[in-house]
Image: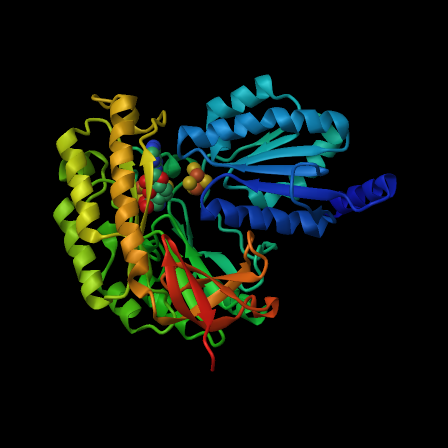
Length: 456
Ligand code: SAH
Ligand code: SF4
Ligand code: F3S
């Protein structure tokens, strides 16, 4: 890192200004958290963060969960090349999930020679070292680790918001859902020690954070691989005790191992938010089996019912894949029915995307695109209709809101988030940002509210 600092200092003298960096996240919240760590390292080296690619160091943190994630990256690389021609000091780094695939790295080596360094998901902490190697070697640096059992603690991290933060509790995934590339690009599941998590959260709280989002591909299996196993629910109970911490969120929950203990801890907690993201993927038991999800339609419905009975005000959200190999109209109708029964506050709907190397990619009965699209549109209509009704159920109530930012379209308004993750816009002064305030939810407009600060 020291050598990189010297380089950046010299660059500063040469340019007559502080050298800049830009990170772009293409994937999920874990990917975003990695970008914050990369930003932390770059700031330590001496760069200053800017918005947009016109910077001296650009990092694309890629995602490969669906084909269109890859397409977006290739689409932007041409633009980066044109910027680099104008700025010879510019360095370009590609990292993240897409880089864990051999075919991608080969393609970049061949067709995108202007890229300075490529690394994967397991060694982002090596950014400074790789940069140093690049500076002395003049060729593209490629460093991809297949897997790792390493958990690197205490990396610097540059938070996007000062009052809320994501906290990794585990890395990787062992579930191997048959459509999903994540276990191949993120490696085997490994949990952080609870002491390290508690310490990080305490430090964040001391630094002004009031809301944390615990991150893992399947938080419900947290702790199973620890020397002294500890359940996710028990971890939540420990975090609940941290003074000054006001809100706890987490994602993602796999339905197959969501425990009664977790429901009980959530029900009795004053800090865990009233929101559960519970991806169903399909409402057909036959398809769920082919997806290797390890639950049936009935298991899922029973679980959703149990959660709603324990916490009637909870908001449930989900992920659904349409057009999985072998999906028939009947399977699809079963999915629609689950949506109608569970009544989600929102749902992310995806067209199945073939990921080479996964079992589903070679399954028979790949669904025609036109058929899948038509089902997708029908699903979206149902999802949106129900989501609108569900959001509206709190109209007229007064709720606690974490104020997040100035409204981007109307600067006289603030935007905040309810415990159940719904957004509310209301009049208020900027100094409320980062604070918890009470807001009357006067009017629901589709998927968000307009409200008024409560007088107290
Ligand atoms: N670990 C999380 C999900 C991570 S990926 C979980 O198990 O819930 C986020 C979402 O992307 C998944 O829930 C799934 O709906 C979707 N997804 C994953 N692979 C996909 C594929 N090949 N095609 C379409 N959608 C996919
Ligand atoms: Fe992918 Fe399944 Fe793991 Fe989620 S649980 S990351 S969908 S393999
Ligand atoms: Fe994408 Fe990797 Fe996340 S593939 S969804 S960025 S774990």
